[in-house]
Image 1 (tube, rainbow, N blue to C red):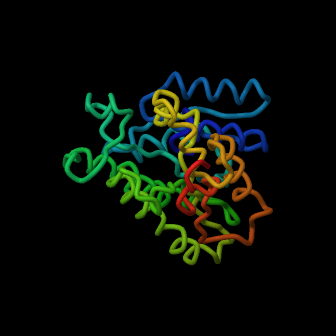
Image 2 (cartoon, rainbow, N blue to C red):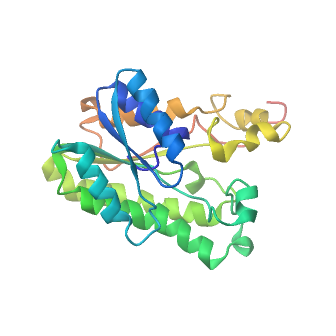
Length: 260
């Protein structure tokens, strides 16, 4: 799976490993985090290996699939999870200071826009393309989108990229159905214990405010998303394909009444 070194990605990797899946833990820059994810899986009795590729680089696919082939050592590929995503250029000091959040149209540079779309749209498209000859019949493809495609959160280019990603599932599901391969998308809401959402605890009242605008009245956790991925990757979800599953706890379903 792509983007598996930390946060939601790491939680998905650990959850799938707990089901007996040999997990390829992809990372772009954070080798130590990826190695820690692999170590935690192995300590729990699972199997995993780390692979590195900067998905914005021109040689990303060759690097990724060379390392994947080495790690699989002839074993079949059964599950693809496209999770890797960026909000902005991580080399931009201003973006880094804001945890990578790029807001409205006036703040976005062409370089940031191009990187967001190269990692969030181009990469999952061509990673999936390269995976299809390797993916076993009856396999699973799960793409990770975001609730920002339906909520006017101030992350315009990121939301646009995730909207493009969501189009993949119904089209690919129809194209690959004859092979028994399911393709689905999960849209998490604001999720706690992730690097990009440290503001939840840095800003007074932020965590409480997000919980109040969520139907289930709490912050989402990476494990909440990982469990949904595990379901869609299992045989129990064999009759579910081409779908967008909102896994936000019911975030922003309606205006939040005062005092709630």
